[in-house]
Each structure stands twice: as C-alpha cells, then as structure tokens.
Image (cartoon, rainbow, N blue to C red; front, side, top):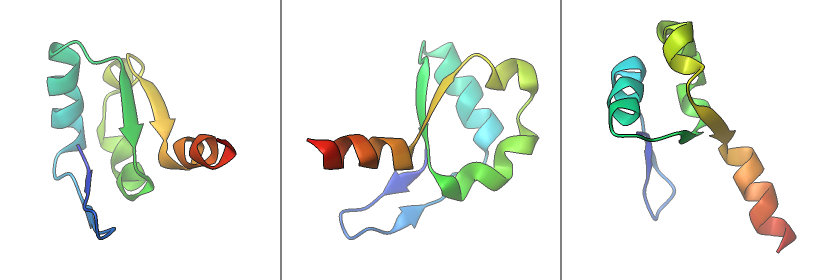
Length: 67
C-alpha cells in the first residue's frame, strides 16, 4: 500500500479504503500500516478495518533492533 524506497522516501497511498478492500479480496489478513497513512484511517469503514491485523512500522522496527 504505502511504499518506502531504499533511500527512505515514503510514497503515500491515495485511497486507503480502496487498497484495504482490494487486499481483503486477495486474502490478506495482516497489513503493515505506516504512520503516514494514519490520518486516512477515518475514511475506512469499521467493518472493513476490523478484518485486518494491523502492524505499525514502529513495532516492526523494535523487533528488528532486538535481533
């Protein structure tokens, strides 16, 4: 959904609700949501949003550091 380049630039997703709907239709259950998309969360229906297990980038980074 969001993209991060090797240089660290973040490409924002334009339609968070549409992307989540598409990922649900393709069977995705876990989504890594960058904080840059946090402001778009209110645009997603609660029924759709509740079907995913969301992981924030901060949690992934903490797990990476611990190794």
